[in-house]
Image 1 (cartoon, rainbow, N blue to C red):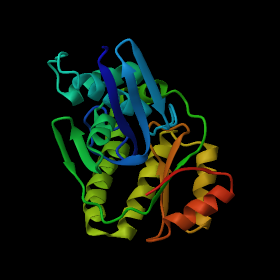
Image 2: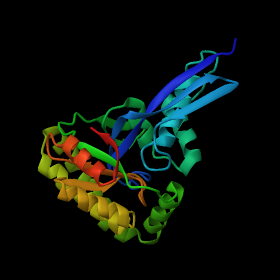
Image 3: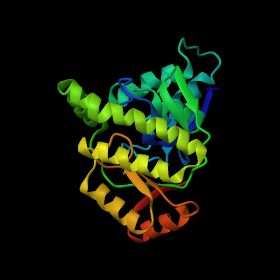
Length: 262
């Protein structure tokens, strides 16, 4: 009888530090999205994949698939691997969009908000703020191309990169970590908006994303930003306390695709 495979993994969104975390220039903060997932089932000769995570949109589809594959095969006792589950998943994810920082697979594997520096150095965040609305802005540019675009900027303008991106991003991540745990809604909102301005200057936003952010603010959102590689796809919004459901419903009426209301 063929050995049965069964495993699943959730999606994610990045709140701060995308791109900059890849080279270890800055930490990053990410949250799991437990309402969307990738599931593997079947046997070694008949593997089936089912996923509710939008593909190539910044919601962690490749990370979820990598973790699900790793979990499925690690559960087969006769198969042994030298690497840990995270190390193996990182290698798998790197096939999809080049070098993986390990951020996505780590938050997906643990299904908890976290402050991430590397696979060996991360800590969980006990966030007192959870009024996030995560939306899909539509088609996104290729993730690998976006990463290469940022890496080129980093290499060709290193001083500017350090002053205008790395320094501010480090401050943003540090502030967000403490303010999420302290429940400081206003400071969290300011940090998210500042983060978006940096990403916008890096040409990671789009007219559609800017339109969504404008509509969200009109409906009472405190903050919003590009989430993930950028160029389309995931957008993270912060609603006022207790108003995530209201913001979500208002955005849906405007034809905006809401992925999750935390």
